[in-house]
Image (tube, rainbow, N blue to C red; front, side):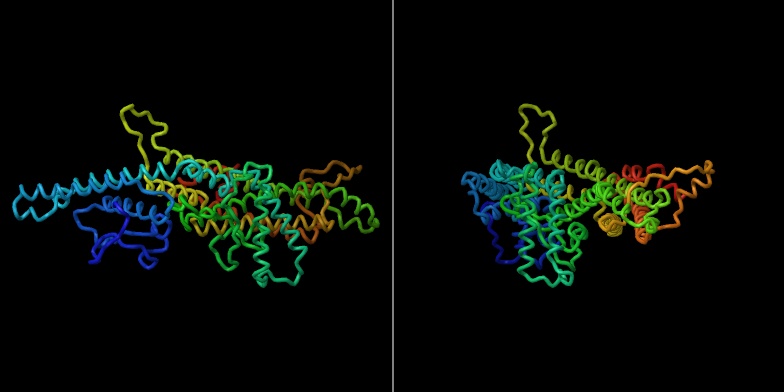
Length: 515
């Protein structure tokens, strides 16, 4: 607790050096650089010591040891002397107690018979250590909220203009990549040099996309990571570039590596992968309207150049097939927009604000002038941040395998639909609203009008694909509604799922089908 050194010649101390074999990979010790030195051996804890007291002893010891290992700042001698005097006072107290006690009790030190003395001293040492760490580590350019704000804006897509630019750059890069790659080329057979070149290209897109946005000159430490094709570690990483799995990551350095580790970064990368896929799908559906509308003039010109006998292949029975396409796009866009707005507003913003409030001690509470300002220690910050990530993952339904799989299917169906319609438009098989024919026929009956608007005897071949995608999308969204409705109460609370379900169930779109 004074020098950050561990000495246990008889192998009996309840704090032991950390090795990968001593703990689970998912535990706190394996998760962060802050906890990589020592851990608690629960079986060795004496019965007269509480677990909270043992954790405080570990906190002070590993704090000093970590700072010594980092070799970034020096621990002041005054603090060492103060802590040493406090611990020595226990022994001096023990000597005084020995002369005044019976022989049966004098052999026991006072922290066994009076553990509150040890608790008071350890807590004082812990507070002193935590205050010093805050004053030396999380200040200036390394302020805690600066890191949290940076992660919120980049990993969780608070920089909307930057995210939109990056998606557009990825679309253009993929088109160039496909045009420069032979049709027989298999992405899995690319050489290591090719993968390195792609990695450099993709990371260059980050800087290019940030130009003119709030993210410009704020990407230090962030980079794209190409993941293993066979790995399911990032389930949404295949939706942005399709033939490459890519996620955003961050290079942990002092002092943020005291609190965050690889598993925290993986959660952030998973959230980014999910959010960027959702945003990409939203942009594809929005751009589809412009794509189909802009190609209408060219397609009308092509139709007029066809011989009169071939005009029938472009007939759409007064827009029936066109209405099918626009209806499906509208349904998809409503679902995607609703999920996106809900996650950003009711999940991420809500939990992030709670994290900021938790890590800002008594910022909004009135305190008396003689009361010292309360401070948080590193482990309280770590616990608050861990809770934030967990709540956000739950709110996005990423902790549910079935929900995660269903949302992935929905995004994939939306992407397939957009790609199909873009190809149809490019090939000249799509024509926007035809001007209805005027005839001298008598007014149609209601039944004739309904039949005219709901049936088509001249379906284009690609319409079968559209109808199949619509059927799959409907089934998946119904499945998602059912899964989200049956989530555990804590997950519903983290994600405010009741609000999302009400919004998705507009006009009883889902619940009305069950009744």
